[in-house]
Image (cartoon, rainbow, N blue to C red; front, side, top):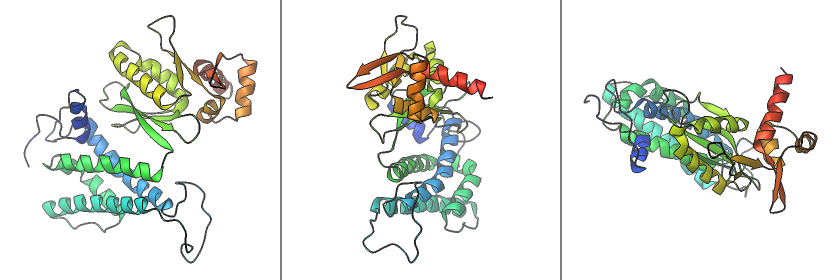
Length: 305
């Protein structure tokens, strides 16, 4: 295999180039930058879990939901999810094909053809794969398969919205919000970095994270993020502040706040009334200030320590 490539060949950096942004620079004999290298291993590590999630929806059940235990196989006429079956076969096929390439070219004994064994094998040889001329295809297949499996395993329940660059120093990853869309409104349940799994924030930390992203270097990303979230979630509405340098206020329904902070809706109404949260009305619904809710639950968390 040849030496270090001049620019990253990963699928993530290919997407960056298509958006007019510069790709990362590989090092150490690899063809991937550090962010795409981590993204590849994170995708391989995620596929076995998504494989299991697709199994749960094979018979039409909700992923990770409760299922009644039965014996003797599926009931006659029970619903069957062909997309879940095809996705499971694709996961097995992709992991198997890349494991086969590694084993053949390195003169190794191939792993057993099970999802867990194949994933472990590929993770063990991820550095070798990151220097292989075909790694661009590997990153593209893994990325697309992760996205496909998520859509099949969690249909119309979650959506990922690109937010911008990761706020952690030295991290070249990109942040995305995992937005729950099952109800009448949509709010971020987590914010995740595609390059470093440790860079993850709970939905109720979005206020603080958004302020970190509002630094001058990220101003363009924040404006794009605000537009995307407003389009996706009607409940999360922004009001321009008097000070243009401030972060725009956001407004959430009681149900949104309940999901974000894991608090009964009745408690949200009580706290909003007792502490006189700012509110606004629209389309027959009441929206509360995200900043007021965040301050309230932060104080409650401090008192409970």
